[in-house]
Image 1 (cartoon, rainbow, N blue to C red):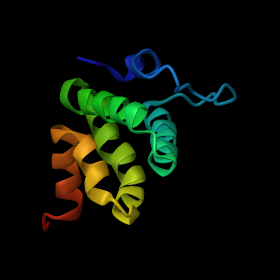
Image 2: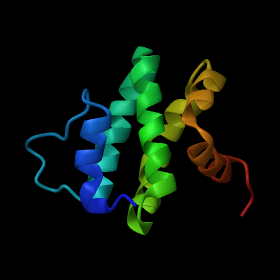
Image 3: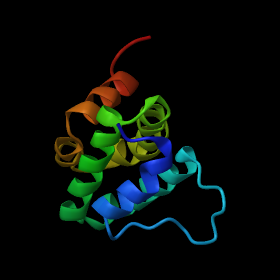
Image 4: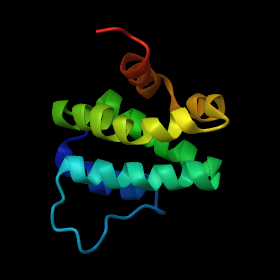
Length: 115
């Protein structure tokens, strides 16, 4: 299980291109995953499928194997932050195919299931 205290180390190990902003003293799980979402959005816009695939693989691992706080932050903060970018993408299906099943299920709940 990946705890909220292990997220920075986990993400920086899995995606060396990603690092937390040095001047950010607020390193809670929500802030970290918001920064990770902004990083992922830049990859979507710049068309970097190799690193983008690693990002989605890592966030899926957090959704699948994170503690409750980590899973909630990954599903809510990360997914909400990138969802507008995904929906507005010209080739939406290409991005959705990279997401992976755990995050895709959360995306479908957010956009397609009625409350």
